[in-house]
Length: 230
Image (tube, rainbow, N blue to C red; front, side, top):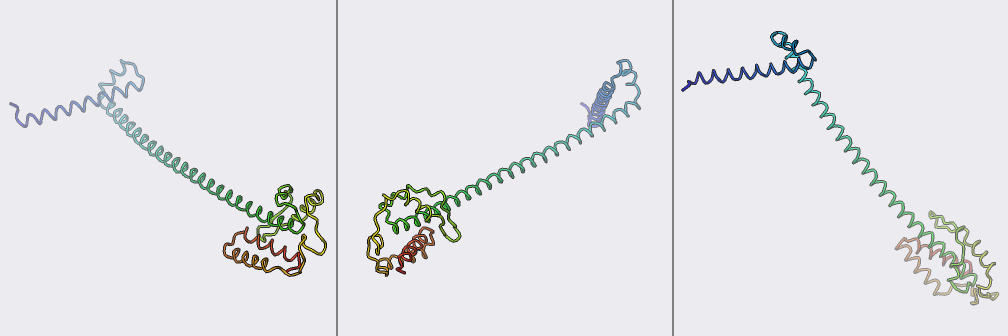
């Protein structure tokens, strides 16, 4: 039975052989890479000094390749992270732009509703003053030239549009008796009911702040002022 010393010696011999085989294989690999003839390769195999230099060169080349691979993988990882960050940035930009567009659309829709309410209120006032037979006839008007200033809640162009409509369709209006307002006695004093209505509208407008409520107050005031009642 082999002694421990013999086993250790055998193990070292096996390791040495493996190392020698590896060097030989490395040398052959390097020699083949030089594109030498088989006879030249066989001749160089016996030159231990040259093979040592070539083997060292091969090890250095492998180390350089390994380092280059490591650097390339690191660069690819950075590029991947950069691409991911850029993609997330673009996605967030797209989300922001969509939210902004939706917000602007909502504001535009709200502005349109306010303008519509102010225009309709002003036309309703003119219809009452001029004796339009039915409120539904207001749908026949071309409102495209009427403008609204949302800062001051002022309507311009409504009177011109209404007068043009009245001139072209007089049959849609009631006859106004001189000395009266649309057939009603002109007492030059607002009826109590109108004053109470105006007060209620003003209270509601102050409480709600809604453009429609404000437009109703403005419309009634204009109507009563036109009649000389306030």
